[in-house]
Image (cartoon, rainbow, N blue to C red):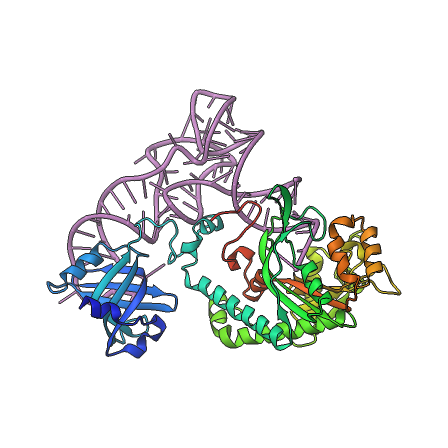
Length: 446
RNA sequence: GGGGGCGUGGUGUAGCCUGGUUAACACACCUGCCUGUCACGCAGGAGACCGCGGGUUCAACUCCCGUCGCUCCCGCCA
């Protein structure tokens, strides 16, 4: 009998209704125990739903009654029994009449955080016990959406002829100079964690790969204490050859995003609305574009003056330009273009007639910066001059500069943050909510 | 790195401003009861040296100083 039971295939709770009238095996966690005098009720949760399992107290069921009496919430169990229709039952109108119950792993009675509790513990406790926190069904949805979003992005890239690359994360020199890289000991010398695949995706252009993308980890040693920064996150990077300007890159990105959001909307639009109360809207193409100089004027017109010496927008400025894009174009996205050279890296291409301005852009989504992109400087002499002007020493980046010595096509690309986009998409106030395991300046465990 | 806020049973909070009872409440936990529950209910119980260190005071969870941790904003960025 035991052998027969265990050979029964598992039924996911979302499919339990199809098993009405026959025996089924359900496996999951104990959400609730209601142990009464004549009846015992369990609510069992798996990653697809919740179902009630029931057994009467009787001599014939004594061993099961005993097990349930000693059971704890959040224990991992297998339940085998007949699935019956019962309209009174609030969890879907069906229940399982327990024939066999196996306690696979008993949970300690005192749980540090309760996945079914009425209130969320504070974020520190939740991050300490992230595996319990992640049992909450609404959190599972976040990662289902991430999977669909990422899959759609990859699918679109591949459809458009991009190659997927995996560039090294161990580097012999910091890719852009500066203090924001993590150094570490590497067989007696210093190496660095990659803070972007920038140099390597450009190498792929010099190699004639034409178009590449990478989805992978990037590391930033910034001691940033905000709701949208992490020291390790998943970067979405792409680079494309034979472009005329950064406009080609923006035109690609907006189509890529519109496609990916359409896929997410189709697959998860309903649960996202129910769980997070937000409508997944597929953005119209093209997105609005606002050059930096004009953006400053618009923001000033809204009563916020960004200091002249500051080349970039500040957070209030970002919110105001997003507000403008919504008022003027009804759009959640806005490209801010043409950043001054002093706030951009040396490899961004500059305009011929206005050389203090780069052919670059940031993409803001509801006021949050989610992308930086540009046309790259592909002419060796110009690139070297720009690196010198920024005060970089050429020796550590000579391997990179060499990419441009033997025929490199004009090209450009962008880098985006997966979690940041997910945070905006699902209307979450903190990047930690949408990160499987967050890494920040003071967070290395679990 | 600069500024603000918060640290009280397993979890979330109240109490602190205006020092003075056994530090309260909800959820969770334990025991018993309960004819199908469904946020089950009822009765009882255990569980907190109030982040840490120092100071003021007859007396400190409460006021002051320091320190550590967390958090938000700014800077930086995706």
